[in-house]
Length: 277
Ligand code: B12
Image (tube, rainbow, N blue to C red):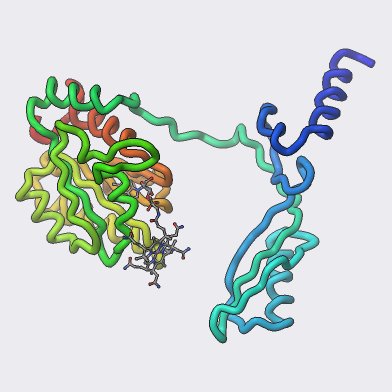
């Protein structure tokens, strides 16, 4: 047996004998498929709701839908009526699809992560005043947990929120803030950055609200004086900032430290175009 074949044989033997916990220790990909019971078995679990009462016919419809999605055979593992007219389903089964992870372009973080001390020191040294941040949930969105995670002193994921930073002057306006009220607050407070949260995405509300917010700021402020506009929420595409008319988007799992470091990168470094610096 050649050396190359011995290696491949050994890799295969190790893969087949590995316990689930050990699999993560191996190099991933580059071509991967989902994993349920054994490596590469293609098993996925999907959940969805159909606008049908819970009966044999709707269960059949759920299985057929799953098969049309490429899950074959599709095993119905859970079905529960949601009121009289809807049913929630969970279906489990294998897909044949493969993913080549070399095909993706990753959006790399374009700034350095700083400690709170470094953030404060940079603002003090280069801005020589507090950096003013105004935050809110706009439209009808009442999901404040995300923006609070970033702004409130207690923070998120073991990091203190922006209110903890001595050199940041933080104003959290809370839930369901109308866009004109947000613009007025930004004018009154002379905001450097406006941080908006959008969690509800029904009928693309997050997209429409963000574009409307950006347009309102651009109308209210002279060109070049618009505060730095940042939106965040779990279902934004991080690469779509320009299309939505904002400077930066933050997605799922963002931590306060990332946002504080970004603010320094965008508004405070000697090379940055701070609005009032
Ligand atoms: C808690 C919760 C509520 C609470 C909110 C309480 C509160 N004060 O926030 C209550 C019960 C009020 C609620 C109500 C509703 N909810 Co709700 N809710 C949730 C739930 C369970 C958790 C959301 C949450 O707190 N996540 C934790 C935080 C920390 O995560 P995050 O928001 O993603 O924030 C992080 C990042 O996204 C980012 N981030 C977020 N914002 C920002 C902003 C900036 C500037 C930055 C930098 C970063 C950033 O940083 C954060 C930290 O990492 C989600 C389901 C889920 N598991 O996600 C549904 C969910 C969001 N709700 C949903 C719905 C439908 C509703 C209601 C419409 C239900 C109804 N029919 O009444 C109402 C709407 C109320 C309204 N007017 O907005 C849907 C939204 C579906 C959609 N496609 O839009 C979800 C997804 C549930 C579901 N699967 O159906 N909800």
